[in-house]
Image (cartoon, rainbow over all chains, first blue to last red):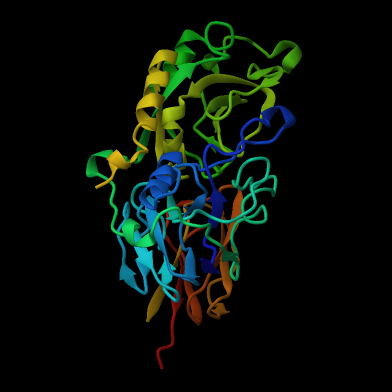
Length: 327
Length: 75
């Protein structure tokens, strides 16, 4: 389908919901960091929403199409061009053999762009998923990010390509991008009063946390929490710091892990267990926003959410990935 | 004429590997940025002489921040 000219900062094959069912064996789930953008990109080109697409992080990706096909671009607007002509976001478009696609850097809002390809991406599933786990070097395209010269093959489209080109997403379902991402989260499993003070929980829900430059597909690191955050003087048998606990499984994806005084949202390629408390869990419907948070620039704010509201939000979001969202 | 070599990613300046007055070639490494726990190399896009270094180690930078100014011989 395409030959890579420049792999950019980090371009990966990712699907959704990723590699589920192996956390107990220490295998990260991986999957698209912004699963909403990936699912819309697939919807536009007639694929099942969770099919694998390209996740373009940071920008600068360039490729030449080696076959005719239909693609869509969703997520942050990296000012993409085909043969030096600007092309639209959130729309399916035909591409021809020899066309060259090029991306600038990430936009004013957001950090990741997704390319959906009619027929999906033809890479062998590994443990039931085509997603790349970049830190484990498995899955996706040879377990790594794309490099110049790589040939990415498309699968067989399920619909006539002529019927796909020009499909657009309805304006009202295109996600809103920002520089302060509001994440709904449920308290726990390690929250007040046992591990965190009431004032500490208030801090979590009131402070706007800057995304640190060290954030990546494993974890999004945030500003430090104050010492009054902790309800205990130390971690007891778990360790000397009050963020320590006896090792346990993490609620992946979306656990807000507190390591020392640093809160860290554990995400796609993150750890499956460890010995630090997890004070919040980001709801499934808002996981996509984390992937659009730009390191060193954007902020994250948590909004309190009940488990019932989380379930409703997930159902409502899932209902968007149907033909009714298209025009 | 002066040209600016800018950051291509946000992050922290890990190091600047050229000095003022040094001659650099297009494609040569001039600085390194720390982002996403990776070191990302900043390359010169022109031949020239380093006129000014605008950043220092551990500075926080945004995409398109000027890092190194080159003086280009237009002749």
